Image (cartoon, rainbow, N blue to C red; front, side):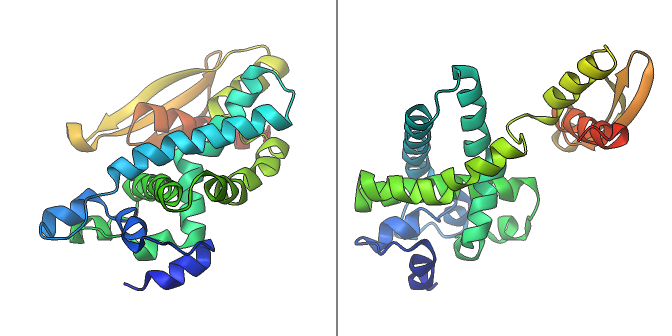
Length: 228
């Protein structure tokens, strides 16, 4: 695997190439390749997660006089799994991951977690190899550059909160959610959830957890009401 190309993408030349490689090693790969000379990326992910939160928190505190609650919501939108997976995909991390044969075939929600974790591990690797300043610059370029759009489009509001806010303001009702249908074994359940205003069913959403189904129902309800 040619990591020189990846170094050019992230614009960082590693002194210790093994640190970069380790950031991309998922534990499933080691299950099939126990003699591989590196460990998985979980310790680097632990380190990178803390550094990411520190850099983002420091930036928000230093540049925005907003109340704590708003800063917390913005930070959550910047460092959540969805955002980190999105940035990881933009960098092409997917092409360089060390995965088991089974994991390499999975392109769903589980892959997003792997991508997000690998991105945090990459931050940890950059910190160990290049120290804090270059890590800070990398995070500002890749993550904090997303902040203007998050603020403009109110992406820091999750769909349920947004639909509740709009519902209370426009029609004076607080939405309620009910499971309409569920099926499948415990390890692979599916749920259909309806969102209601008073007793009126506004929209439905399906997901592999009640929370995911509720969020999809809220998104569908915002579209149904044209409250986006």
